[in-house]
Length: 224
Image (cartoon, rainbow, N blue to C red; front, side, top):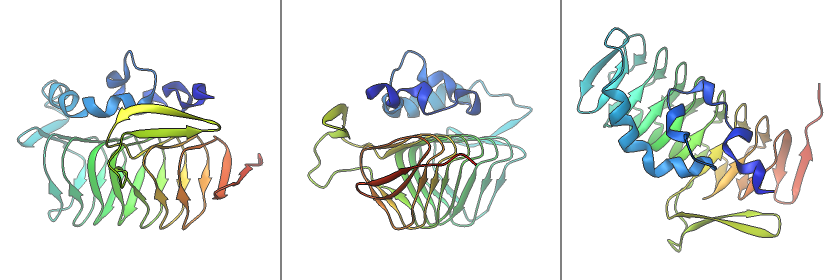
C-alpha cells in the first residue's frame, strides 16, 4: 500500500520549478525539511530576465501579480503568471508555482505549491505540498501539528507509516478538489484526481480517483 504514497504516484514533477528537491527521495514529505535551503540555492540561479529580487531571499517573476497588501517573508519564490491576492500572508519557505493563485487572507508556510494550483480564499497551507491543479475550497486548511506534539504517522489500512516529522500537514495530489471548510489533519495524503466533500475532516491516505464523503465512506469516482 505504501507504494501509492510514493512521489511518482502523486505528483507530476514536470509541473514545478522545485522538481530537483525530490531527487533521491521516495516519499514527497521527505522534501519538507529541505524547502528553505532549496529556495535560497535555486533563487540565486534564476534568470534575471524573468525574475527580480525584491528582498532578502525573495524572488518574484516579473509577470506575476502580487497585491501591494500581501505580506511576503523570505525565502520565497513566486513563479511566472502566479497571482498573490489582497492580504495574503506568506511566512516564508514557500514556492508558488507558475499560474498558481494564493487568495485573500491565505497563509502559507514551508510549502510547495505546484503550477496552476489554487488556494484562493481564507486557506492555511503549512508544511504541505499541493500538486498540479490542486484546489482548496474556501476555508479549507492543512493542520500541520498534532495536539500532543508527537511525530506524525500516516495510517494506511492496518499499518502506520512513520514520517519522522513533528510538523507535516498534507500531500495533495494532482487535480485534487478539496471542498470548502475541510480540514486535512496532520499526515493526510490525497491521491490524484480525488474529490473531498465540503466540511470534511480527513486523516490518513485517500486513494486516487475517489470521492471522500466522510470517514469510512469513500467511493470510487466513475469515469465520465
